[in-house]
Image (cartoon, rainbow over all chains, first blue to last red; front, side, top):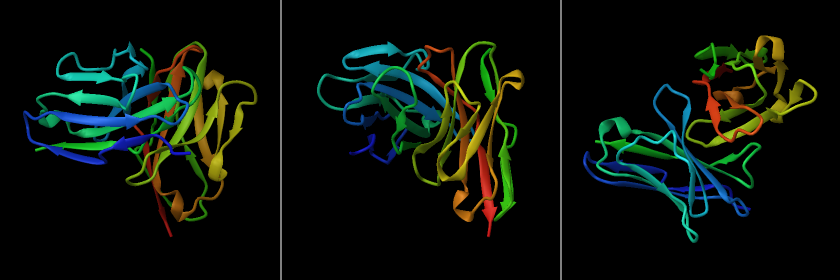
Amino acid sequence: NAGVMQNPRHLVRRRGQEARLRCSPMKGHSHVYWYRQLPEEGLKFMVYLQKENIIDESGMPKERFSAEFPKEGPSILRIQQVVRGDSAAYFCASSPGQHGGYTFGSGTRLTVV
Amino acid sequence: AQSVSQHNHHVILSEAASLELGCNYSYGGTVNLFWYVQYPGQHLQLLLKYFSGDPLVKGIKGFEAEFIKSKFSFNLRKPSVQWSDTAEYFCAVHFGAGSYQLTFGKGTKLSVIP
């Protein structure tokens, strides 16, 4: 039973490029959450999605960031026109329902140069 | 504002020493409490969780935590650490019984010296 799969593990982008981070939830999990971990900080909630719906995006920066979880395929976190401050580890988690503990993926480490 | 505090940024212990990592939160209502561990370069793994019932919770790898409601604390303990416990430890909280959003502390790095 595969866990939460995130790819790529490491992503390097130049300032101004786009970053696309992918997350495939665990089998049977229809709830996906994205968190960001900045250096020396704990994880911060970004967005909560169910299939084809954004439930809560209160933690997402208002500009350049978007997320989707289509009916088919992985959840995508998209960052347009990346800046150095976007460099961080981005973790995805999934759960079978809205409550209870979730399972995290290994994260994508984004470096903006 | 709701927040989670982990007081120790970096803890260094010798093997076989006892461990206690502090976690406090600020919120007067119902909480669900978690401890996660992150080994270098790996994903977060759930060590243990508390939802209700016995405030002393046992987790994996010999870890336990005690919820003290009056102190708003959920400290993580292990009687005898091993070199393989070297990792970063995060306390996390669901504020409110119906909450899905986890609020994390900043983490505590544990280094165990052989």
